[in-house]
Each structure stands twice: as structure tokens, then as C-alpha cells.
Image 1 (cartoon, rainbow, N blue to C red):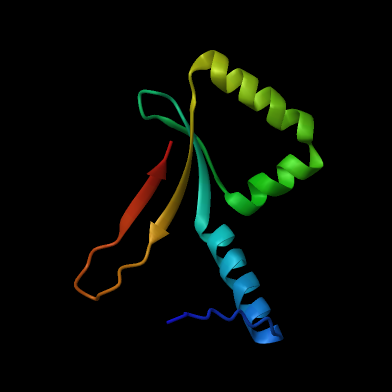
Image 2 (image 1 turned 90 degrees about the horizontal axis):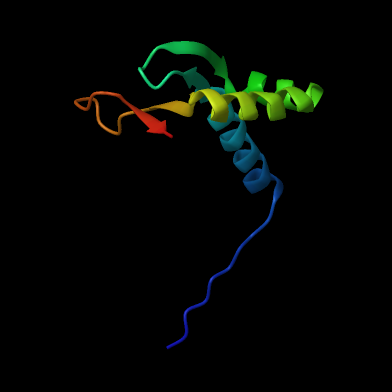
Length: 94
């Protein structure tokens, strides 16, 4: 028996996908911290993307300085609990 998968592309699917992506970008933060845990900077991801587009050489310089000084760059996003009894958690990507 064959299984058929159908993908429909319509304005409703495209709009909801873009909305999910934008919501995800707005909820994510970029955190620059030392190895000891001290936070130097915490920016929304959207602002970090705009800075990278406007001043691309600053991103390259920040990466080189970060590697030289051993600075951690992480992306944080609050995870919404599926159930009312669950407590919210934070995802750390390093």
C-alpha cells in the first residue's frame, strides 16, 4: 500500500510560517558573557541581525575578539510550558 504526502502552498500556510519565524526571532536573545558567567551584553536577536547587516565588519571583529578573549556567545529563548503545571525553562545554546 502506497502512502501519499501532499504539500499545499496557499496564502494561509505561507503567512502562518512567516509569523512563526518572526515570533521565534523576537523571543530569542543573544547573550555575550565571560567564561565565569558574568554577562556583558544581552540583545534581542532582531537587533543583533540589524547590527550585522548595517555594520558587517563589526561582526567579524567581535568574533575575532571573542575567540581571542574566550568570550561565550549564546542564544537564549524562553520555552513556553505545554501544561499549566509545568515551570518555564530556558534553552542555552553554546
